[in-house]
Figure (cartoon, each protein chain N blue to C red):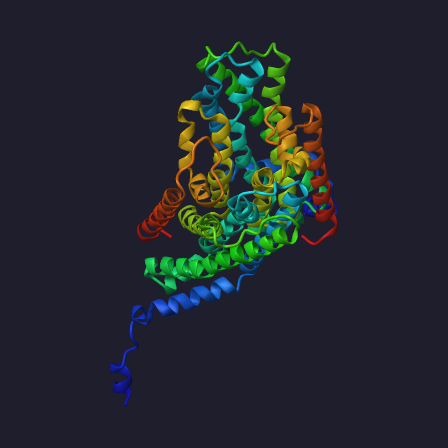
Length: 272
Length: 268
């Protein structure tokens, strides 16, 4: 009797560790934080709201009757610039929030396979952010286009134009990738303030400084900055030269992959 | 034996009696200098401000001989980057304490809340002002030495003096702006996001997206108002230098007032 209970030893912890279980726990952590819902709802409000506001301002400012469709689409999606910041912060908080509160010690004790933890967090982030940015970019475009059409005399834009499709989808993809860059930075730097400072510095301040300060001979290098590479896909680069849309997007993907790879290396090899 | 009686009758002074501005300033100075991130961010400030001047930007004025003012401005571009470092430092003066719980100890020890605010403001303001002025002057002097062929700019020129000193002043006031916003928002992530949006993202977004007829108000944004003092506003039109600086100081004073009100009236 008693011997039976002895022979049936509980299976070791690692045996219970399935990706599904880790995903579920990460999802629970993600959705139970107030900041998540703040940042996600701010994203929708800013993208959709700015789309309507910016189109109205453009019309009142005397938009040309024959404005090329791609310019209208850009005008509608400019809100993506600020949601890059919002979702970048969301990505950063995935890890730094846990380092700040000490939760990371529990997480890693419970999920000792560290890359599994990283993978689960990244999956949850992508699964939420990518649909959200895509849907809000499309909704923003439909709304902005509606406003544009409702004004007499202006040609409707619509999805037919391949450039328009690229800009609408592209703006969403770039925002989602910025969130992943933030995720990688946060996992590497581990401090909320340090990571946000770095993200803002790289994505928003460096392009401005590069535009003003780089000598003419090397000013073209600014197009390889992450923000300018991503903007090549939809918004136009700040600086004298721009990458082609998909090359720029590819480079931004490369930056994101590199950041996540460094994060994985640091999480696996270093102390937590 | 009588010694014990003397000790009993000689009551200790109440805590509030010991509370002097000097003491609070000293304790805030200790807190500030004993945090690693302070030294990180202050070094980053100096390195960026001076480094950009020496290695990068004066080349942007190459070609024809630049005007002294344009050359001076080009040596100060690094301060746009170091602005970010000082904003982070400023925001964390308060949010760091709220995050760690230290604020409860601070307010217990210094129950006069405005005294605490002035103490923090004094310690932070003094070091940031000294450092940003020193680094903006160093940036200009070193940039001038390294790129001596570019332009005949030196402190005699009133515009040059205004730009060099102005870049340092704007840097310091921006840091205080961050401190006040941190005291109001009390959360590092939220405070930094707000700062980033106000100083960097919104000016960029609005400049790209607004039709030119609506861009007039962009000169009133904090970053552009400050930029006016050293000819670096990114808006199509710009305030006059000292008006712009006064407006930036006005925004900062308003935020400090709100922070004081919130700290005094609200729960901590």
